[in-house]
Image 1 (cartoon, protein in one colour):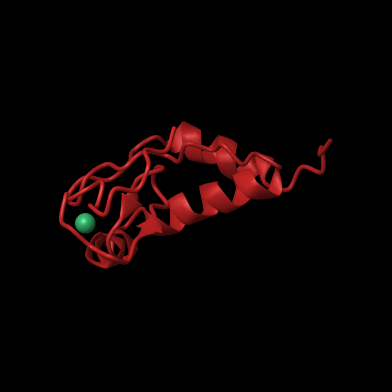
Image 2 (image 1 turned 135 degrees about the vertical axis):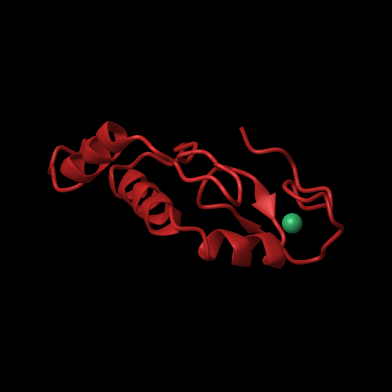
Length: 92
Ligand SMILES: [Zn+2]
């Protein structure tokens, strides 16, 4: 699960006073790493996957995983699953 906030970015280890949670995983990251995520080609997918999880009532969604700055998450079948499930009304 999420590591406690220690004042250091979980991704780049830089000391920072401001942090936010990654859309790709549960890392707590600094604004610079947040910016880098938002520029990542998979960011819309990561954000959608997280949003869908929240809408499903899944508040422990671990994220799709951070592929790294220069790598893309490639799992078309995974994405089909995410996107086709998103409209299903089966909530508890
Ligand atoms: Zn950082």
